[in-house]
Length: 502
Image 1 (cartoon, helix red, strand yellow):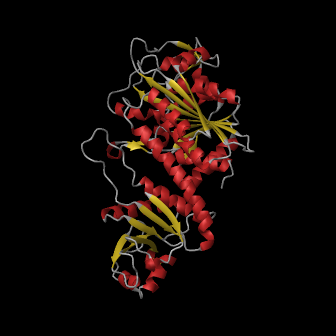
Image 2: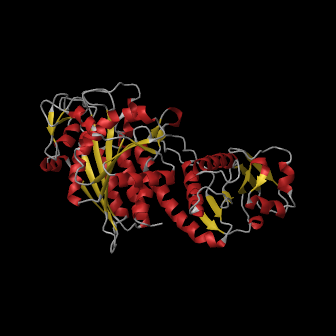
Image 3: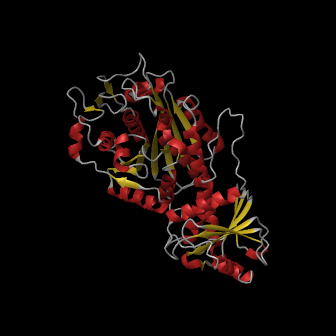
């Protein structure tokens, strides 16, 4: 699908459809008012029939509009004037895409730049939200070995009309950012949606290595295999993969821009359990198929590195894809085992299904060698986080209030919601072991997401750190089954803010 920015003469554009906005009480947007005048008030005469009220979600297609070359005009309802927000704007665009696809429209002009969804940088956010919403709602999971062709959307050219020429520069910047972020989201979703017999730890490592092939000037990749992990003392990480024939691989993706004045180093660590059976503490069979999504954290890091390279951000970013598979076998680690982590701390295993924190604790220790200014780990870590926050909001934990505020700001900008949970010292008591420095689950069944984050906090005292628990937000189930790509846009925006790139 191709996207263009243009300052159009709407009535003279040869296109399949022009999308314009109206508000409640049939108030016209600037673009709608312009085309109404061009058509000798054809639009207002039809609105008098009350076929559309202008409420959010309303749509109406008009044909044969006088003095307008376009074959159709699609009216989209935007609710009360000046009360639109990003969330509702995305819903409106989703509805419009559904209508366009039903009509087999190939070429469309969206003329909605006059809408207000952000007090600051409105044109930037209009263009970005518009593009991301269109690509989100035309995304399809590629079926494997299907004799049927995958569904093909007809829409292939989208022009975004900018009414005021002065706004064209910001619109072009936004288009560039949005395309990079969209590529990141799609890449993360494609990787996450693969079945575990294809996307295993080695496959994940090979995909990481391809980033160097695509961006040789900015990205280098080192893949650490199980033997090297053992030499490094990463025994917690290694033990999780012991039960599987698919051995663990950790991919270290380093992005940097040459001659950058900004020396800030940011590390992103993604949990990459390409399948999690629970190991000896095996999960119930119902819904275990969703455990292929236990690598969505690694996929999010993978996608975010693509955005950084596409936009040539003035940062140094270390992306860790912690690939592993947790399976039961005679070689698997057991409840009762005591493991020595890379940090030297020992951990008593109470439950082998609390494996993600074991992989992450060694990854968090490993990343110290880069002396990072900021470390963020992203993980589908706990079902307890889903119980606490549901499927709409990711959990946030941090040892630094300023970093927490920065992530909140990026969350508000992108509408990728997060909520902060505590790391109070009293929770650390739950991790006491009679035989080791720590246990891996806590001694009670309460506050599971907090206990898991507190476990990780023991390995992050050397730097500013945040943990995003995306267990509830990384994928959808049932008829809408598939990866969401979250929190890729949040991470991308955080990096854009860190680089002062816009």
